[in-house]
Length: 158
Picture (cartoon, helix red, strand yellow):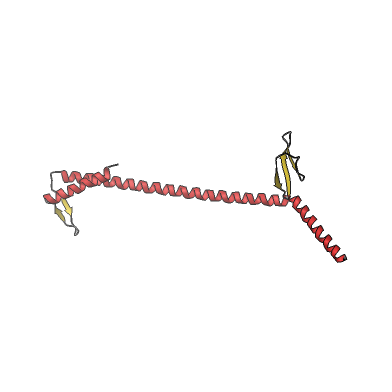
């Protein structure tokens, strides 16, 4: 019987201790009639809106703040990396666009030059695959003229 009583008291003591720990984990926060923020382990008067706030010890608060700073630092570092990557991609895209525009301008100038030569009165020479210069006959000249006109239309139009 004494054993039962001690067991019952031990269980009751544990329950009270657990309830006390649970009660100490949270506090009530509300604003009173004067606009002052109030904190209490006891609930506010009936009809007052409140919120329950988790209590933390100074060490927990410090660890939490440090973790927050570390997280912010990581986020800042990640944001910097993303910004640098975007800047690099933008620069590469601009470089490629500039190169494409330069190539197009060179091709346009070459097409205009070829067209001018083919429209001229003098003979037109073309170098074959062996490096020998051959004069174009009228049919070949007409074909090359047509090709040069297409090249000019393609490379010189906006």
